[in-house]
Length: 265
Ligand SMILES: [Zn+2]
Image 1 (tube, rainbow, N blue to C red):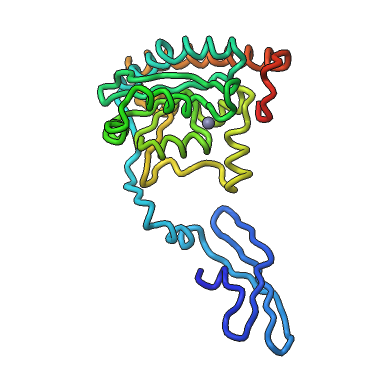
Image 2 (image 1 turned 90 degrees about the vertical axis):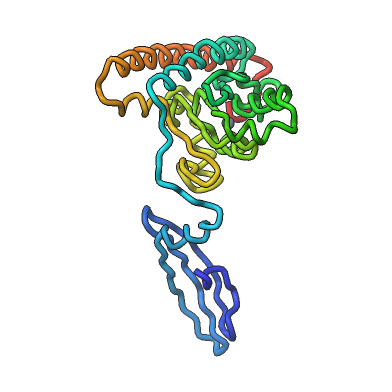
């Protein structure tokens, strides 16, 4: 790895000319020019594991996945429907997108919830707007401690800006309802496209030193058959239908909304 970004080693000149990667390996194509004028190309291949060792000082995956009990999942679905959704309906009426979030205490009680407000400012995604409102009600002296014990709940899987904002605010436990695939189906491909175009990846790492995230729909679907699971599935399907309808409303109305000149709309 040490050779990869060196342009000059001793009397030899190395020019990195091309980089590409496959599922398991990185490849660096180098152009080599010796002092005698001879030249040739060569390729350095590395597997992803060897390159990720670069980041071990900031990444300590424990291997344990974030999960929640059926009653905790139900509490979060209630919060989405009762706390976040009313604000999102109002937001969509003003021409905003359908994304919302809530910050919960360790007893799964809502401390603050809010919704997307991109009409006011394009970076006020649901999560960022929620962190902003939470910062207004939690004193600066308490925020760090509060964030560490809090649960960040997002209606949709956070985009690269929002997951970074969540981490920068100090939250380390993140649940979301809709995964990227459903957000894309709801007409918003930008979460995936920005992740891919800016960073060349399909997703942030869902378990890392700073946070763990889990998808509520996945947690429900992976439960063993039980009465609890049946109740959660019904609730899940109701929420999916509500958000599908809200998404349709947003997309149907955005073209005629003179306030909505969002580039990523
Ligand atoms: Zn976002």
